[in-house]
View 1 (cartoon, rainbow, N blue to C red):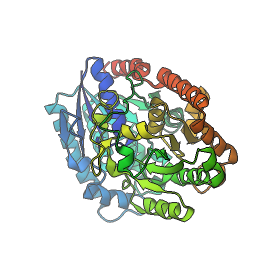
View 2 (spheres, rainbow, N blue to C red):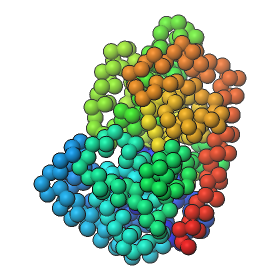
View 3 (cartoon, rainbow, N blue to C red):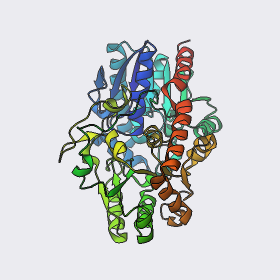
View 4 (tube, rainbow, N blue to C red):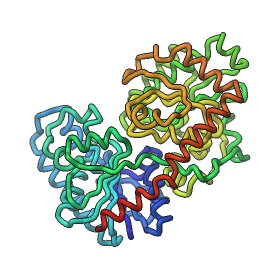
Length: 443
């Protein structure tokens, strides 16, 4: 079959783009062909069909978004603009399906979260009118994000995000979304969690990436505490700063053999503005935590990073030249993942793959789906409050130090986590799920 992925953006290192690359790899292994349609496409996603208006940052999409949410009063002309843009996008979808001979559409969050509402309308109308077999992969549902609660398009959200159509098979990445979709929409969804290629050996230190620490101004006397997420408020990065602040206290530094902990952020800001990054920089400076925002040093490239398993492309880690994203993990001593909300947890799976110890906040999906499996991680419970710095307790700090300085404890922790993740979240673990839903949607 020829499977056509559709999303607002299939580029960079956001969770949805990463998952698309992995799913395409599995589908190709099953003998299917894949093509891609989005408002932004990395070069590795080929054959591709670029439709700039599909991107949530397109000026027309931004205007519609800003006038749909945060108010219950529709601006004059809003509906007309939505309808006009949806009509253009529906025509583009029809052209994509026709030119690329698509047998099954595989939407990625485009029918789940209304960052680009006209695209959801266009997809819903196209599927309803044509009976196109569709897999709708729903990573983030509208009601899971507070920013979409107040709006003036409740009918569109009800009809399209996500739609209940007979030719659509829904997939969700966690059990909480599965239950909510059943209760709110009467729709049964298949559980397809985030995954990683655990069967491919992790990349190692090479001459090409060895210089990364030096390019960041770090030496072997520093502890690289990695925050491998985008810089958006729901990532709870204030809690990572607090952990590093505690680790830098004289008594703890002595236990860390005098090494200096430094917090390094590997992913970009900007998806939700730059104000949060500015606040983090002010906070870090105030409490004496070195914060390195190093997104420009890493290739944010989902296809190159995951489409063929672990990254194999390395670029010289010299001043001003980017490395593969995975190089950040290769050099890391410890990972912080204090997210308040996640659809699942791509960076957590990456951390387990690279056999690194980690701090994780018990965000709802982690507590429901991941923690019960028995992973050996340093947990905190900050609820959904990034200002709840008391969640970083003395026991938290002690556990982090032990994971960094005790090689026996560290090895036992990371090997257990790797083996458990390989059994539950590998490509091989979910291949039967994908094969089953594809067979069902084509009936």
